[in-house]
Image 1 (cartoon, rainbow, N blue to C red):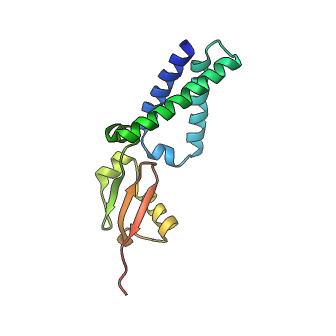
Image 2 (image 1 turned 90 degrees about the vertical axis):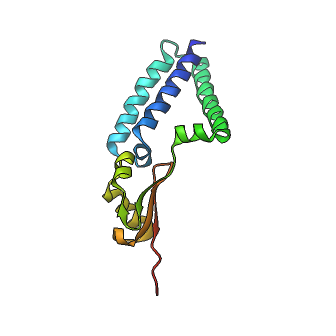
Image 3 (image 1 turned 120 degrees about the vertical axis):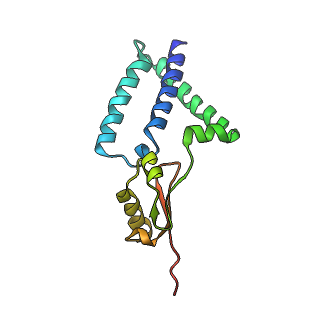
Length: 150
């Protein structure tokens, strides 16, 4: 039973850790992010498995982690508050071509990130062409272009 408790504690710890790290930390994986993830996974493996390397323990841990994930998904569907707490909410970071720097700082987004998304998804080259840019719950950036007359 201690394996199950360790799995629950580690799952909740990682959930909180990645929530604190911010949405953008999960949206685009850099080399640094990959290395950090591998190190975290090794540390977590040691905490989860402890001295029990049996197949039974491995299956129990996987079932516990998947069960927790399903349970939290089920609860989030019924609780807007918990869903916002765990997944966040979309945040507007550009409005009518104007950068909302306080929100950008909170979301850990810079002008380059916004312009990259504008070029990549909408073919836009400047902030003046952007009606809105939104950091989504997933960490991705959605850009809504201004309507061009004529």
